[in-house]
Amino acid sequence: MKTAIVYRTKAKELKPDIEKDSYNDPDQVQFEMCVFTGGKVAQRWLVGKGSMVWWDDLQDLYKVHIYSHPDYGTKVIWNDGKIEEL
Image (tube, helix red, strand yellow):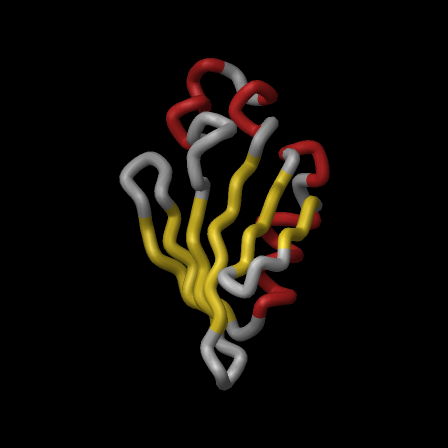
């Protein structure tokens, strides 16, 4: 099992005021994720009211919440020390 925290360093500044509550400040974690040994992924949002989502695999999560927002300045920090700047 591996875990990660995800920052979106530019997302909040790109949004109109009415949407800013859905994004944390650049130095705050946006969401956490856990990849289980079988490949399933849990994603826990730390913004707004918060929520928890399950994904069949990490690539699905990345397609929806990371690759589709290249301007958000996404930074993924894995528990093994690996850092992805996406």
